[in-house]
Amino acid sequence: MTRLGTETAFEVLVRARALEAQGREIIHLEIGEPDFDTPRHIVEAGQAALGSGWTHYGPSQGLPELRESIAAYLSRTRGMAAEPGRVCVVPGGKPIIFYTLLALLEPGDEVLYPNPSFPIYESMIRYCGATPVPVPLPEERGFSFDLDVFRAKLSDKTRLVILNSPANPTGGVMPPEDIEEIARLLADRDVIVLSDEIYSRMSYSRPAVSIATMPGMADKTVILDGFSKTYAMTGWRIGYGHFPQWLVDPVCKLMVNSNSCTASFTQRAALAALDGDQGPAEAMIAEFRRRRDVFVERLNAIPGFRCAMPEGAFYAFPNIEATGWKSKPLADALLAEAGVACLSGTAFGAFGEGYLRLSYANSMENLEAAAEKIGQFLSMRR
Image 1 (cartoon, rainbow, N blue to C red):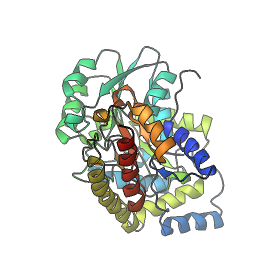
Image 2 (cartoon, one colour):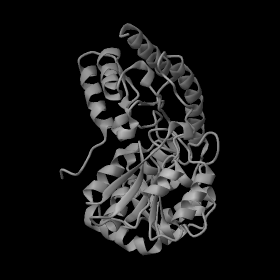
Image 3 (cartoon, rainbow, N blue to C red):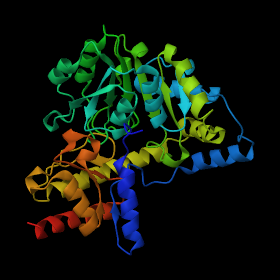
């Protein structure tokens, strides 16, 4: 248990809520959650499912009709031949990380993963007794891997490579040529790729490319995706993975031993999400783009801040080195004194030092107020 880490966003949320209970006004930019309600037709599908008796156990792998819809969706959006038999439906995106790593890793194995990145990657690598091998994401490369560093860190012990594009916390999207080169480097190795594509629909400048579409990689790639971000369904707890065929049975066995199955009525709602009106999701993503453009401009106007334009997800990741502050002390001070809840870059790994993560999944009014409060705080603390 001592090898397990945590997710700082939830810790900061608790502290922010405690301040609010004392009467403080807090602008929440810490949690990675759309501020939109789940689209009405999805909610109605879930309600109808409850009323129709979808309240019993279902198949551990997921309802067949949902797996068929997911395979069609992946085939359509990734340009690949996804198969329903290789889809596993689970309660959220994290179980795909959890099950994949538990199924694959032994002590002594090495895992290459981006840093800074979603903290559960490193947590689970360590929990499995494997060795985390962080690969830094240079700002000057759009927060994509330095491929020379990636190449140098590959070894005979490398068992798994984790990719995340569009990325949390940086908002970076890996260029297609980088994906192609990584696929080439892994083609002849006994290595599996876990491709976290939970923000796949939130790529603003160019479509995000999945490594599963590269020659020879479909049978070496686990695609992680879900409904939380695209359809504002974080509380529904439903996600899925598309696996190499030989990994499906181990993952289903882990489901049987942990969750039995994913709630049937949430799966019916997920079916409505994929097969129903995409207008609400597209409108939400367009609004995130609009907020991104304004918020990044406001952040870059703050003395000491330098914020690259994020190409995906809904996070800004400004460089704050010129302020003279370290990341965590500044994030803590902004919450305590300015009433702005955000995350230190180091919450996502050691290479996040010098950055903050601010979610722009909030109203334009609050985003502009947050930028003003940050600027005022720094001007008073010079």
